[in-house]
Image 1 (cartoon, rainbow, N blue to C red):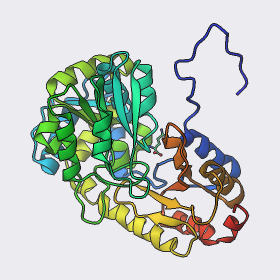
Image 2: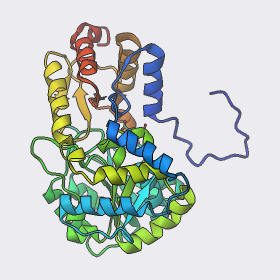
Image 3: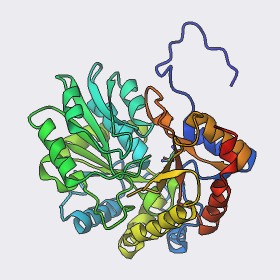
Image 4: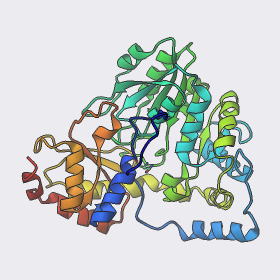
Length: 393
Ligand code: GLN
């Protein structure tokens, strides 16, 4: 973009550009590539859910919803939490509907951080955490996950905790790596944050997409952590409606009270007919309880199809993303390879270096497999052909 910034203006986010998701999706469109970059399904939403939205629009549910979210939806969310985690959460004081997980995270960070406070971020990390911290005047403190299996070194996290630490972000199932946290991880987190004024922001938007009989370890299940955590969820991932931007957060009453103060001025309230429709739809748990097996089939299909590709997978245990390493076959930077694959080969992916503050490049690409089987077939046919990589060595 060509514009002139007045010399008197000082950017609050000088190092931030347009998100990689926006860039790669546009590049995929411009070059006609199969888009496995930005995470969104390419299949249709349930007819029943679509017609529920329409019915609620016709019933007249078209004006502002309550700031906290439509009560019927908050009640259904509370039931869903009870079914999944056997924990009672109050729709009145502990559950708030937001414009997607991103808004919940932004509101939580803005409500919690004072200038100079520190927030620990585990990298690679989803791209909205650090800018929210910086905008609040906070200081992101980074700790790297293990570069091969993306597990957390809690001792390294503990070493970064200071008197100024106010927030720690966790994310499971993890975007972009597909790794998942265990109960032991939550125990470690509880131990290192005990008796300190630290709040956990737990990004659990892929809670219903977890594989290989693993079960999602929510902070809500951990009674000690739950007293100081904000758990963030998203209907976009669960019901294939990423464009609706409806999510929610669950937090103890004192945290909810503070975060709602921000939510009410950033968003005020969320699309009303969608909330009523989601409330009806959520009442039947069959609508989401088979999601893991649905996506596990896609992951397995994609991994099988990619078996003869020169790219090496780090098997995803959750989310709808699969990482592949190319470090044994090319020294190209991951950004250049992702661009090359999109423009010249015909498949768009996400380079992982963008999820590190120092842009460290461990030669991984992320592919989204929330796609029709035919899309995955076509993409892997292209990627199996090793010849494209020869030119990049
Ligand atoms: N969560 C999506 C992903 O990881 C991206 C959403 C967005 O484009 N902001 O691909």
